[in-house]
Length: 79
Image 1 (cartoon, one colour):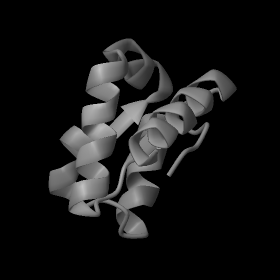
Image 2: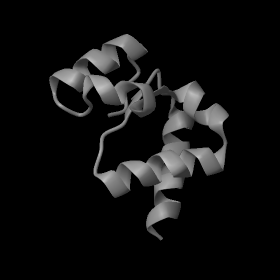
Image 3: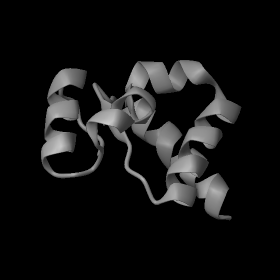
């Protein structure tokens, strides 16, 4: 899930609609700025884990530049 909402709101909604469980929040919920600051290799590790485990991820306070990073990283993983 990608949203401009604050992290707490995204986490609450993500749990309500079963994207993530309470136990998954610590490693599955990031602000756009947190994700951007990780660098490309860590970003790919997180996205790869999500794909491999068929899990959910939450991205909050996401700006257009963060969405571009996500799309680029996901595209690199599938091609």
